[in-house]
Length: 135
Image: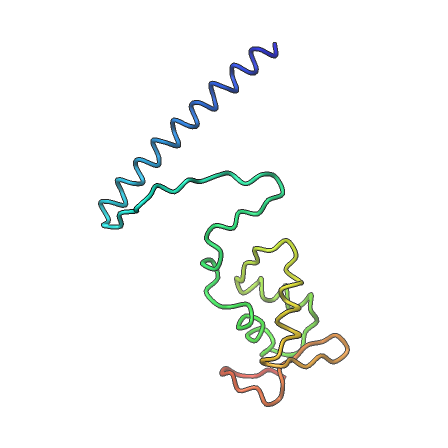
């Protein structure tokens, strides 16, 4: 029984490697047709369990986290969890396993210096970053 399972695994692995090679060749042909010749064929790997795949970071968000936080705080004061939820609702995607850490960097940063009153963050009264300020 174990020998059969190993043979099946080896066969499937071989098929996957062949398919990967076919797809990479096809992608190379497409890149050539588009005039985007690559100097090397990229080698892609599958991340191990618990590992974050970091290819393409920074390309999925149309605005920075700071701008997203400012945008949601223009509607009024919020707690950190409320800000996190609101930022995600407007489409900001975190790649971190702990987005609250990144949010803290923005909220406790220097520019703009957010106001923290009893755990509720708001924009400073003199903030002139554009857009309307909420009360």
